[in-house]
Image (cartoon, rainbow, N blue to C red; front, side):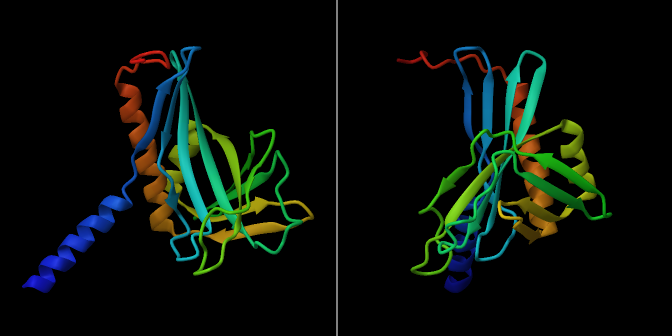
Length: 193
């Protein structure tokens, strides 16, 4: 009985720790509302080599959606990076390929970020892609089975995606953003100072 209770408590704690949520919701000085969800490991394995985050910028009736993709690189391969306008290929389960180009002028790179294995630290690259509402809906309905990220030196990173994780990511984070947009948010940087 005690063992079952302990297992239930551990399960509840682990589910809460991995829950997707809004981590940033702020209106800037120009009246643009920026919303960002928590990241999720869509690769679904211990190496944690592919993390995604969805965000949105809203001004009036116009909303732009973004997907941040963070991938780990070999810490010893210091020559590999991503071009500023790196492409990512999203392959749907039915075989269609959607090409997205990074909107960042400069790729964010970190040398000491995620722990890959015990006593090993990797380098990460983070790319941002603008996506349409139609593309998000397509990702949710069709599912994504594979990603290919363009790197320099004619290198690519291919990822076989855990379909359950990626579908959960797109549907949950899109719904979280829609729920946040349905509420009025008028606070600014100066409020509460």
